[in-house]
Image (cartoon, rainbow, N blue to C red; front, side, top):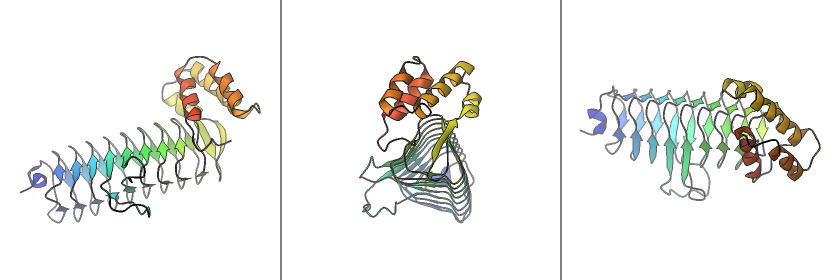
Length: 264
């Protein structure tokens, strides 16, 4: 009798749970689901039918994974040669139908990391070595390639495609079917293929408790970055002069840490 059969959840008799899997309390696992070796599933998770979870994978508490999702499988990256890489998923995530999330590679940090309180809608794909923050929404069929970073509170609309190594800052909104080839600075709204900056994510900032003054400051910073025709170093200098506020620090960090260059 393994940990799965001793847990206080409902594990369907047709589910296949490897003896080495560690299953928390009050975990439900639906029919025909496969949980492989080196998998840890935290308390209160609800795993639907026909889900495949492969390890090494660590899943936190109170996650809900819908049918036909594949979690923690090996990447198709041709450089991957079976090394023991990991997938780490936080707490309170909703992973809808048909989502695929791959483990990392040794060419990066060896881990794919999903934070907490995210909504991954149907058929989302998250490639190897990605980092998705907290409170993000990835809408149906959004796909992020390997080594991508998605900041907290970001929304990627349906059918968004993100190139390898792109960083998307916190509080961004990316419109439907956009192609992202370069980094998106914090709280910027981007549309198009390839994506171009349009404005700040004013409504998102408002919903998340930023003050009217902070939103006005963010708007000034955006105009310095995109509307004044300044060179990037000139724009950053003028943005820094706006004041020592968290929202300015957030924008500056997302631009200064860019390795692919920002959308312009």
